Image (cartoon, one colour):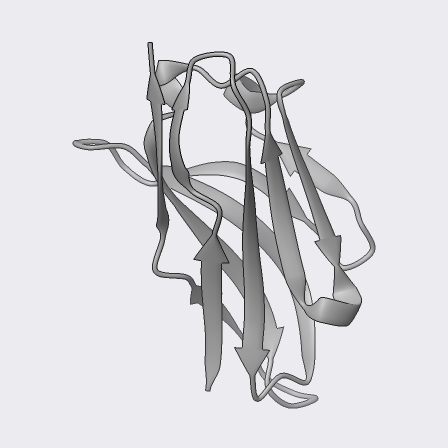
Amino acid sequence: QVQLVESGGGLVQAGGSLRLSCAASGSIFSVNAMGWYRQAPGKQRELVATITKGGRTNYADPVKGRFTISRDNAKNTVYLQMNSLKPEDTAVYHCNANVATSGLVANNYWGQGTQVTVSS
């Protein structure tokens, strides 16, 4: 059993910053890629950013230059630093992690989501 718990969402004015955290816990053998996705009302869930275990990052075009993803492998935690926030960044942000619970099997897990609201 693996759990992902996000924190750090909230309400912020346009131009402000927030930092999201997501910690993986449970029967973990290793944590591979981790990432953040978001889902705005009436829209499909979309990629925000991902990071490999080795630290290679990938960002969606709308957040490039404003958001930074990072991770602490010792803590099985991924972070999303969000700067210069815009109203269109308003969404529920979900953490995702590819976790091996043994040396042979890895599965994708999702957190429950944290609300980010950016006011204009």
